[in-house]
Length: 437
Figure 1 (cartoon, rainbow, N blue to C red):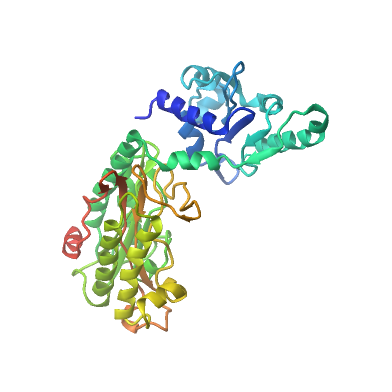
Figure 2: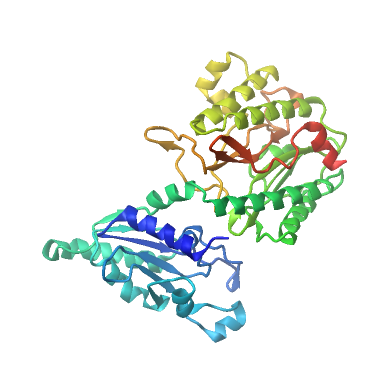
């Protein structure tokens, strides 16, 4: 569990990074609606939550290093008994101060008046002008315009705007022990839900039934729900990377690609397995599966401190290209094909890894210091090679068309190597088939 002490330590690191003469502003993500009056369940803003633990909409965080004025200001929705009857309780200004340790807590209705004052004495503002909160963006833009006019005479006011991700993304890339525990729990829930859902895969069943089993499994095991829209892609749908309509009925000859993850205590898991609908892996589908599995194993073996994100991708890609040649999807020398890139990306269009954490595609640069990012302990990344042959790919062998395979696990970089957080879910063909039959 993340404590208020941890949130305070995170804010302190941000304050150290920006230094005096700067202000750091984060606006919570906007509420979304269907139609004119139906509110979607609020998606808690990960950045603001990372620094505060605050989960209500409309909030705005301001951090400003100061020796004699409030350092941590939080603008929040005020208490409103009438609205709370409809949408649930609010903590209000009192909770922002007492439960979330704000030095100064104010109603969001004071933002237009008070935020310009907080920004008027700084040179640099860390903020975004595309937060999805037009009113907040407008106040920041107005402060910058005002400073442009007045600064020559007063010597005060912001004249530099910096993306707050330049500070936050680096902090979030390295997971604290409590964050790792949360990801482990999300992974456990996801694995157990996959096992239950796999037993429902059969010819004549709809993709949506597997989606329902997964999403229900997440909720029944205490997760907030899916970390992203669940993908259940059978037959040719598996060649569509983000197939989320889940509207096809499975047949006995299909492979079905399932990509899903639970969100628990704000942290995400992300697993992909490809299952045979009946009878196990055979023929072209079995051949593709073995190639992707070999690429998956090679990439996981390449994860260790001192390796790079690129070297992990290279390990998977080399195995996949060798397999593409064997399947007659491409012809030529392995190294030459990798260097040309285009022939390879026709069948493997994505990278092997992405960061994982508060977001399923978590923040953090993949390039650092002019080269590929070096892996360090505390980073969590996915390993997810795949091979996809669309049904309309007339330049491919007919037997391969309409087959897509991806295998994905979540991996923690440790001091002495790696920990596959999702290893409890099988990947070997016989074990995968056994989950279905």
